[in-house]
Amino acid sequence: MKNKLFLLVAMAITAMVVLAACGSDNSNEGTGSADNTFTVGLEAGYPPFNWTQMDDSNGAVKIEGQAEYAGGYDVEIAKKIAEGLGKELVVVKTEWDGLVPALTSGKIDAIIAGMSPTAERKETIDFTDNYYKSDLVMVVKKGGKYENATSIQDFSGAKISAQLNTFHYSVIDQIQGVQKQPAMDNFTAMRVALESGVIDGYVSERPEAISASAANENFAMVEFTEGFETSDDDTAIAVGVEKGSELTEKINEILAGISEEEQTEIMDTAIKNQPAAN
Image (cartoon, rainbow, N blue to C red; front, side):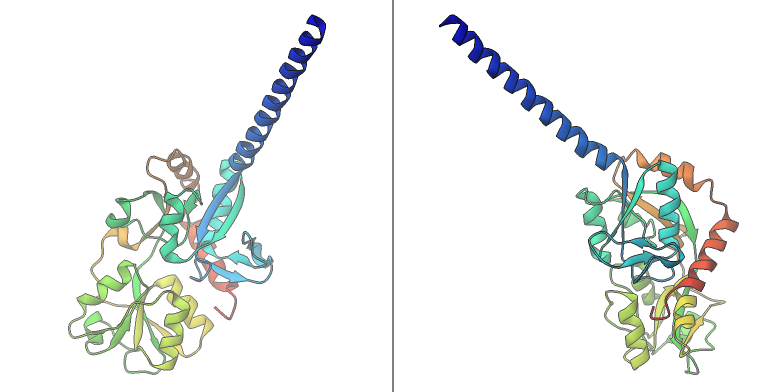
């Protein structure tokens, strides 16, 4: 009886050890997988910073859960950061309004999406050092009445829009007498609206405007001698990370190794490689 009882106890202990070992292995496996990836959120719809394409040409990266690929300046920077961190880059295509919630909920590790480190955003998330800086311009119809504008006040009476939940939309108020139109979800929608005459122009950053005019011969970029009043943070581009994230310092070290000349080279290449449809 004692032998039988001893055998049952021994079997029970063995089973517990095995289960504990299995649980430990599964936990380590999950942690290891997470530790080996750098998950980045972006729109994949803001060329030349980021866009969607159908193959991996020009260094594009597969979008998680989709058959498509993401390319552009942001993707190239994300690749350099992932390499510097010693991790595998995972790109998650996310609507603009969903980027910050995706970061704060832990669905992504960072936002690399042409996002400016504005004071409002800094209340919710942290930002790294800048990885690009650009000026605000206007995209208009080529040959139209606004193509030769030199001041933002030349757009008095014009129907102007910008992307939803961006500082681009707020600066429209600096134009006296402007007909401020509803903000739009993305740049594709704004390009369609401009092409169809629904708007006379939209506020953008120089790289996107160059991209737009390169993709559509009917568009032109207007640069100003008397432009919008902005802060340095408004026109800069930085990586968004969670509050207090240990990634901030690590990413800053990697970004410090990318010179302004290299940034310009990467951007010029992105503008050249963007799909015509964008």
